[in-house]
Amino acid sequence: MYDVLVVGAGPAGLSAAIACREWDLSVAVIDEFPKPGGRLLGQLHQEPSGEWWNGIYETDQLLDKAETLETDIRCGVSAHHIEKTDAGYTVHTNKGLLHSKKLLIATGAAESAAPVPGWTLPGVMSIGAAQVMTNVHRVKVGQKGIVVGINVLSAAIAREMQLAGVDLDSMVLPAYNSVTADHAHPKKVMDGLMRIAHLAPSAFLRFGSKFAKAKWIRDLAVSFYPSGGVKMWGMPIHVRKAVTEIHGTDQVEAVTICKVTPEGAPIKGTEEKIAVDFVCIAGGLYPLAELAAVAGCPFQYVEELGGHVPVHNERMETPLEGLYVAGNITGIESAKVARAQGTVAGLSIVRDSMDAVDLIEHGIESAIQNVIQTRENASIQFHPGIHEGREKVAQSFTAYNSHT
Amino acid sequence: MNKQKRITEHPVLGRMQDREEVTFTFDGHTYKGFKGDTIASALLANGVRRLRVHEETGTPRGIYCNIGHCFECRTTVDGADGVRACLTPIREGMEVKSGQKEALPLDSQHHDAHKLPKTYADFAKQEAGDPHV
Ligand SMILES: Cc1cc2nc3c(=O)[nH]c(=O)nc-3n(C[C@H](O)[C@H](O)[C@H](O)COP(=O)(O)OP(=O)(O)OC[C@H]3O[C@@H](n4cnc5c(N)ncnc54)[C@H](O)[C@@H]3O)c2cc1C
Ligand code: FES
View: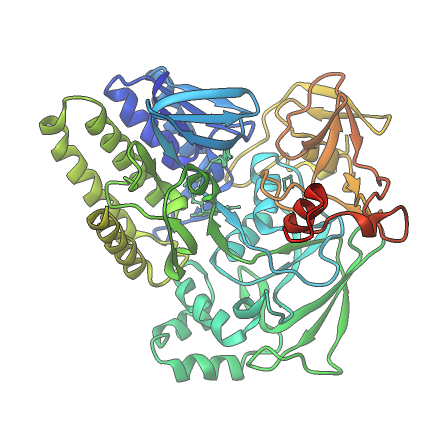
């Protein structure tokens, strides 16, 4: 029986484990990936200051700390079920049962699909798959590819592939269907592009983002979007072109793209075929929260946070006693925020595990302030309404607790 | 292993560190990868994208998410089936087999598939033999 079990060795899980080990709780961290670090491992972007955010380096910093504190981290262990017991929680894994008094679920995020016909062919993968192949395994995903879906994540990863010498034709939208919806709508995609303009060395976007608050200017930008695309790091981005089909027999051989109206409707007669051997699909991220659901935690749908999230408060407590959440499972944000949230969760667990209330209260307060600060300074933001989203969840935690 | 498919030099991450070579088989062919590779990354470095075929239609499948979420990369590893190639590190002598087309017990063209229950209510009805369940 551990004091604490942490599911997920990403930035949230690792920093929580560190906080718990600093107070000498017995901790086990499990992760199904062969290496600890979660999605932090693949990350590589340049901050507006010019500094590189290198996920492998950041992971090593966390692991060094965890190792110094003799933290038990087990990779290749996959959790598939959770039971609440009298003493705490039992977690079912591929390596057997694990028991703990407190449980932190820090399983991060998953990618939403943006399906287009032909997307099951080998060579079609999610944009995150390409990130991991490129930066973690150091394998080129192909000779020449195309990115389908334009958002902050795909722009960052396209740049990562370019740095690694992987050739990309361009970034385009997915063809409109009931699933791709907003991802296939040029005006909505343009809104997102304007928000990442500070990361991209593109005069068009920089200029546009100055006026990003005025909707009519964004609409104008979409209407008069250059037909050669807008270049970011030399790579064309097309918000007025979409992939309608992916072709190939045993693997990807080509895609058909066509021009679309400012609303995303395909324009007949504009189809062209482009030879590629890989396709990366970027449909955005959602919190990977199933385990919290099987544990019995109540949920709330919050668009601004990326989907259904377990109800929790700013101390990372859920309404279930002894169950905590941290990181992207609570809403889609950057790794820095996840890491800061992990510290809050770890300290909350410490507070609830030992007679340290007075000692630790101050630490929790400043860790919460650190989350807020980190959020405000974040250079990568996945959703614009993150504050409103966080507010909604906090309110439902209060409501939930006052009813029970 | 095709070295051209490896990103040996990188402007920010630096040169790829020398890693031990590991030999394994996939559908009877011998391949080499590096220690730390997953089945999926080692195969891709060898130019192999197809990890299985769809059980019913036989159409080819490869990785999709590469981080364990989608289960598109199911292979058989040393006799155990349904193993995710993107999460499983290669080991010396490991035998990997691609996912194959399966017999179709639920195909209505064959067998008595139309007699099988489609919902739990159907199932309960058949089991209990009670028309009012
Ligand atoms: C594909 C992808 C790419 C991303 N790229 C970026 C980026 O470039 N920049 C950026 O700022 N943000 C990126 N993000 C957002 C990312 O979620 C955060 O930056 C950050 O990594 C979140 O940290 P976390 O600790 O909450 O989760 P993660 O870092 O995702 O860690 C969660 C860990 O939990 C493990 N896990 C999940 N389920 C189970 C289970 N059932 N059993 C055992 N282990 C499990 C996973 O293997 C993973 O290691 C990306 C997210 C995804 C999904
Ligand atoms: S590729 Fe998605 S689980 Fe392996």
